Image (cartoon, rainbow, N blue to C red; front, side, top):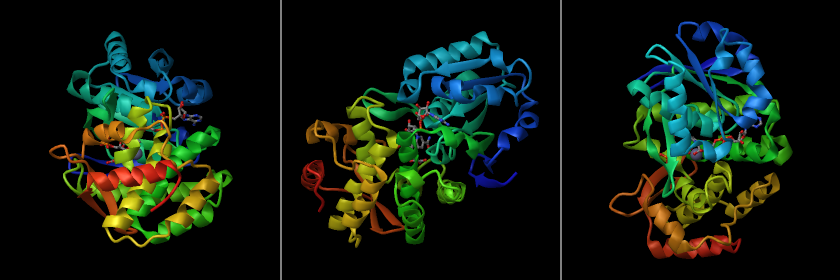
Length: 359
Ligand SMILES: NC(=O)c1ccc[n+]([C@@H]2O[C@H](COP(=O)([O-])OP(=O)(O)OC[C@H]3O[C@@H](n4cnc5c(N)ncnc54)[C@H](O)[C@@H]3O)[C@@H](O)[C@H]2O)c1
Ligand SMILES: O=C(O)C(=O)C[C@@H](O)[C@H](O)[C@H](O)COP(=O)(O)O
Ligand SMILES: [Zn+2]
């Protein structure tokens, strides 16, 4: 199986990626006393039977089904999943298998990391977005006051990314996942960004035969960063490009009102404007927003969002120090930095972007 090795301070593990990989699963999980699958209701109805065909007998009795989307990342669902694990006699030689997108992965990883102080964790991602979320070991649930505020760093034993699952993704989820690929390009390499523009001229081209290759590139960008800084004491924060505003919009709108990727795309446009003003970035943002508009993104800040309320969420972002929000900016494509930004600049750019204008 083709794999990309993730080599962190605490663990080294493979991300197997390609078509038809589910066939290879059974021998990888046979050593566990029990496999608890955590999935969501959409993935369950579309793909659970296929997964169960490749798990040891009896696995169908140990499937926890979370609500779809951000509703999976709540304290209540987290507690229900733990209760399920206790009632199903999971022990320290059992494992938790995340089967779904990033929401399921984040929930399942946090359950695995905390049940009996940590049992084995496996990721079988089913979304484009999960080329990001399944790799690197950030697992968390949301707090009403902020995205992913409750979580840990906990690496999986392996990631098995069977790209056949991506075929059933609705358009809105393809767009959501593609935003993280664009992020990986921005923080790494102008040629990667040009390649994405060329390969994906509009929303109908995201699911192209080239997608697995693009996902591998994205994973390698992430692997390279996580390898240097597993616990985000430095460069890992660059993976948060677009997320300071993005997470605030998600929390403010009520988790799930906009997808993570849409929010991050809006946040990247905001960060690019700030970068042009304060980091010396030379970049044709008008052309870029033309392209993403063609793809189907609405990069305007939602009209109902008030700067004061959004700023309060940004103040609680995990990159904030002493109540001063910090943003990932670009000096040039592939050259990120972390910086404080003057509140009045943030306000004026926010108001412009809300009107659909750029600076
Ligand atoms: N841990 C990390 O490093 C990291 C990185 C990026 C994002 N995230 C988190 O990931 C989440 C977003 O990830 P996501 O978009 O994959 O989330 P998701 O799990 O919410 O999936 C999105 C939707 O797609 C559906 N779905 C999943 N697979 C499908 C398939 N193959 N076919 C049809 N429908 C399918 C799901 O049921 C859900 O409704 C957010 O909570 C975000 O904060 C985490
Ligand atoms: O892996 C990382 O590091 C990231 O920042 C990846 C992000 O795409 C992802 O959304 C992550 O969950 C954000 O982390 P957070 O620490 O800002 O909650
Ligand atoms: Zn993200």
